[in-house]
Amino acid sequence: MNKSKFLMVPVLLWAALFLLIPMLIVVVVSFLSRDTLGNVVFPFSLTGYKTFFDSLYLGIYWDTLVLSVVTTVVCLLVSYPLAYYIANATPRIQTWGLILITIPFWINFLIRTYAWVLLLRTQGIVNSVLLHFGWIHEPMQMLYTKGAVLLGMVYNFIPFMVLPIYVALEQMDKRLLDAASDLGATRWKAFRHITLPQSKSGIMTGCVLVFVSTSGMFVVTDILGGAKSMMISNIIQSQYLGARNWPFGSALSIIFVVTSLILILLFNRAMQSKADRAKEGTA
Amino acid sequence: MIDLVQVEKHFDGQIVVHPLSLNIEEGEFLTLLGPSGCGKTTILRMIAGFEQPTHGDVVLAGQNVTKLPPNQRDLNLVFQHYALFPHMTVEENIAFGLKMKKIPKDEQKKRIEEAVAMTQLTALTSRYPHQLSGGQQQRVAIARAIANKPKVLLLDEPLGALDLQLRKNLQSELKHLQRSLGITFVYVTHDQEEAMMLSDRIVIMNGGRVEQVGTPREIYATPKTLFAATFVGENNIFSSSEGLFAVRPEKLRPVRETEGARVTGVIQDVLYLGNVHKLTVHLDQEPMSVTIALDFTDERPWQIGERIGVNWSPKDEVVIGA
Ligand SMILES: Nc1ncnc2c1ncn2[C@@H]1O[C@H](COP(=O)(O)OP(=O)(O)O)[C@@H](O)[C@H]1O
Ligand SMILES: [Mg+2]
Image (cartoon, rainbow over all chains, first blue to last red; front, side, top):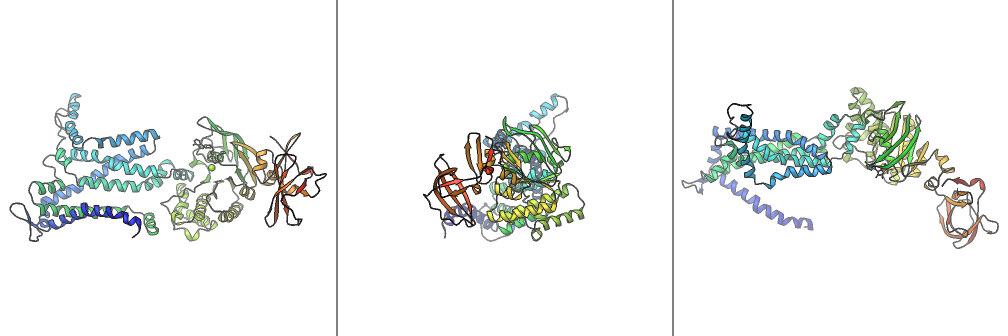
């Protein structure tokens, strides 16, 4: 064993202890049953997986996927221009832009999300302002809607999209744009054919980060979505903590992890170009 | 083909290119030669349109293009570090400029075939830049430029990143290419040998100023300034009552009798280089050394430490300005 591999041992142990073993426990539990007190017991059973195919849970699962995809797309549309602007600004503006993007991380996540409640509720700031100017005549129901959940998700996860795209754009060799211009490309064509493909790795990373974070998030749904909006992670949480049905919670987790992984793999495959495959071939 | 009219460039109030007027002929191979940082790239970038001159005009084929962006100028630049598009194959790289100009598909195909044939890339068209050697990448950069059939090709130290042997091979290929295309080349290098070998005319630059413009022969035989005299080839600089003059090493003649010689000195070093040998002689009259180049016909044994005389004929003295 050479030295660098030897140095990997603690990392691998750490990963095994805190990642692999809990994962295995979840897999095992998902195939067990529970007794009337909520204890996890033998025998082996597929009840957890069978329960998932109830139309209630399938519907929630579908909603979760749709919300995660929509959040990812909206984040991308908002973040790309922002990342592009920051990456092409003067060093001073770049520094400030990055600080502004990361400042929300210094504030507790719950507080940030509750702040939206103050803005969106019936007597909230947005409604008050609109009423005051007479643009609406009675308060709009904004809180506890799907729109509010989407807003909360997008707001929380924009940095996850901006930062990887910023890094990709920042690292791009700017001389390629000179070359494109020299070969007759307009600014738009140079963006379309050079900048966009060159920032693809950042887009892919950002999309996966936002998708995974959104689909695993239950706090935002709880706070901004109210009782009606449910995502798969809300169910998992309630099966573990409220209903004490661990085998079902575990089965949902496994189903969710596996389907997410498949989706991410399909996404990566779809985004991969001929050039990426050539690179993998020689690397 | 290109007229630079009193072109001047400042960066942050600092003069990088002093007012420069230059007329580049059609079909000419013109080289900007000078040490690193003397403003060569800046001049090329002003011709291509990436930099705006602070003062002055750039005229291309009779049209004042000073205000035109690079994508509207009928010329192409081969970048110092190639700037190939990493996510495109060789063929896609070459096709890029043709697509941008909306050239019909079959014409595109013909032009790509021509360009890869001229640059010997035919077998590599489906490779990506990272799968190519430095010399091959360099060829792609040239193929990508010439496929556009520009009136002028600008080349910024195109061989600078390559090792010596490859550079020598590509130098002759470039010269051959320029002759067969018959288009104007504006070439930038800091390598005086390369400039001498390739150019129809050389512009010697130093500190943002033109020192001399001339054919390689003129530059070598009659340098106008001290910088030009010493930057291109070896030279010996003497001072006389009228000023400075230069005498090339091969024009100096060593003699055994010190009496009656123009100058005298002690041999410090003898170098045998096969076809020539060189003597380094420390002079008695002035605190300096001169280099003498002797061809292979000279079979006299020269010893280190020997005191000799050095002669030259007055017609080989080249008077240079300060
Ligand atoms: N964009 C720029 N901003 C400020 N100074 C520059 C810029 N580009 C070049 N310079 C300066 O101009 C001088 C000439 O540069 P350049 O034309 O690249 O020289 P060369 O190509 O002969 O090595 C250098 O001193 C360089 O630092
Ligand atoms: Mg340069």
